[in-house]
Length: 112
Length: 108
Image 1 (cartoon, chains in turn purple, yellow):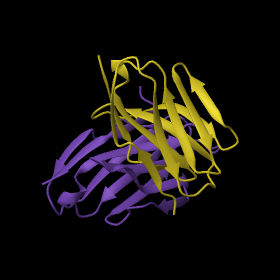
Image 2 (cartoon, helix red, strand yellow):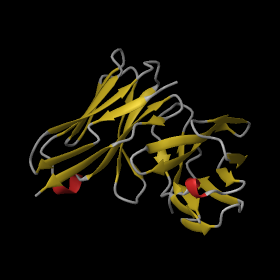
Image 3 (cartoon, helix red, strand yellow):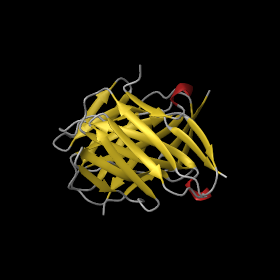
Image 4 (cartoon, each protein chain N blue to C red):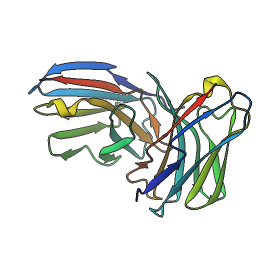
């Protein structure tokens, strides 16, 4: 099993719908991150969490919200999806001592 | 606000060449810098991690250096192979900000 698991892997949704992307990890890490990737723009940080009670906005948090349900679970929600949120979304984890970060396989989201 | 830049955006080389990818960052107060590889449509694979107190790290044909004072890191790939073709990304921590990546093509 993968250390960082994202569900779903692919999703097509309609404009205005609420959608949740989920991330779970088995590495026991405290820090979790959500990114989106668009062609030519690299990965941009949406939200990050240093523990269950510590959630922070990243570069592009507008239109997104997150929930850290447990140390191992970090969910990203689009309250009312719009077409320019079509992207590849990645979840990542790292431990408290800022060592190596690990990524999930990504969720391809299409908003039509 | 930390900004990370990678140059060049794309690079095409013949097989066997040694090459250097560059990563620069605006705020030198970093904890570490990590290099990743990404194949098309896939996730990220960690290549090398350099802590802020280190100058370089090596793994096989890869060598990464870090100069915090000048805000730069380089990834050196020796004797490039077609299998090295991918996008290479650098990320700096505190909060793990990424550059846009360098798309590398190694031609047989």
